[in-house]
Length: 174
Image 1 (spheres, rainbow, N blue to C red):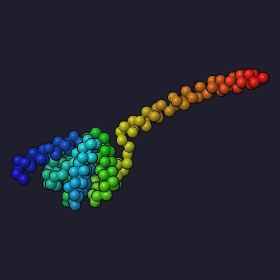
Image 2 (cartoon, one colour; image 1 turned 120 degrees about the vertical axis):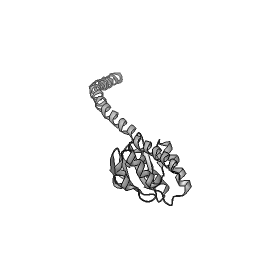
Image 3 (cartoon, rainbow, N blue to C red; image 1 turned 90 degrees about the horizontal axis):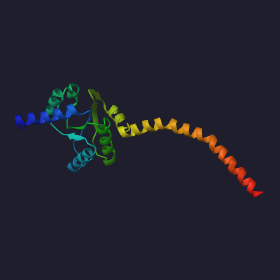
């Protein structure tokens, strides 16, 4: 690859790393091309990117993007899944792909903001609910006390209505 092309690739990766909120570093060696295409398709559906670049270029881009902590983790054939919105999405989508397809990919680590995560922390991140699920749980938590209050206030009224209906039926039977 020519020097000009390398600088273009480094600048593209640098921009992607700079605007990403989270990412996962994984091995892809021995993965069939069809599986890589399938993985890229699933990642694209989730709004994620897969970067497969030489380690030297990735190290340089990480350093220029202000993510120096990543440099030491690029050894062997690596790919980086980058997420821009939901911080758990890169780990979740990649782990779902690995388990469902049974491919021999392994996660070597990842990053969240400006912190390196080991493989165990990436697995934990993959199990977190999505942002929309967390918002739904929060709203459900806010709604629960109000629903309980409405039920508590309407309960005595319903008791009176049931008692009156029973008395009416008793009087009609006589």
